[in-house]
Figure 1 (cartoon, rainbow, N blue to C red):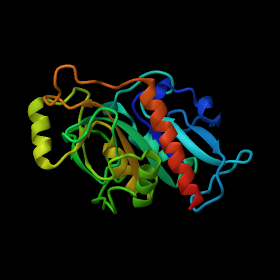
Figure 2 (cartoon, rainbow, N blue to C red; figure 1 turned 90 degrees about the horizontal axis):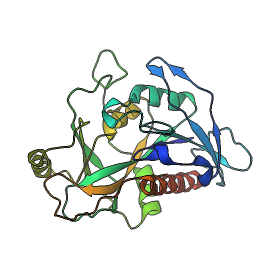
Figure 3 (cartoon, one colour; figure 1 turned 90 degrees about the vertical axis):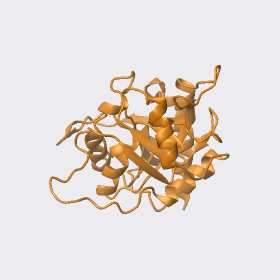
Figure 4 (cartoon, rainbow, N blue to C red; figure 1 turned 120 degrees about the vertical axis):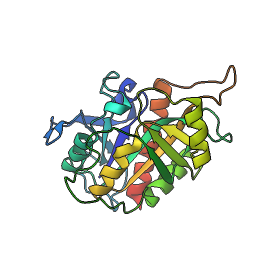
Length: 252
């Protein structure tokens, strides 16, 4: 079963607008209480990831908002990724899709563009519990899940099919000098969410792919009057595209 983690403004969503959704029982994890999880029932044929218990004619897809169920309860720097990933697997997830609002570093990108990253730079410094392992060195099997990336690209077309996401510590925004340095390092977009989420998913053998939606131009690069795109419309687009990608994956 695929689990979708919601990013920017997911707490503004009305899940019933996207289909039949049921709340799952609360779950305590070794890392603290899990956030609220929903299970959507999609009108999709059974496929290779269809390990969900079906409700009605559809196939189950899990969904949870990283930042809170009905308001911004925690910013990206304070998301309990260990609890989120642990709970997703307990609820039956076998793969992860997500969406993220990002700032554009690459001058080819504009507000409203979509990009499916194929690599990332970890520029965080002090995030707790970045690994489930208490000893040893976790080995990253692959940064992003290629089948998931392909489904997101198809769902979000037109979308940039490759790019590098740099994850910063937050909660503050980056300085112009930091953005200039990240550009020199090869970053195309900047956000605060994917680390350690993508690494924890890899540790739990949960293939992971993400959709980036450009909400603003990164610090120091914006011109006067440059647009910004935040709010419920970003969340609606993100969830709709991730659900579409989940349906494509179920068909394969």
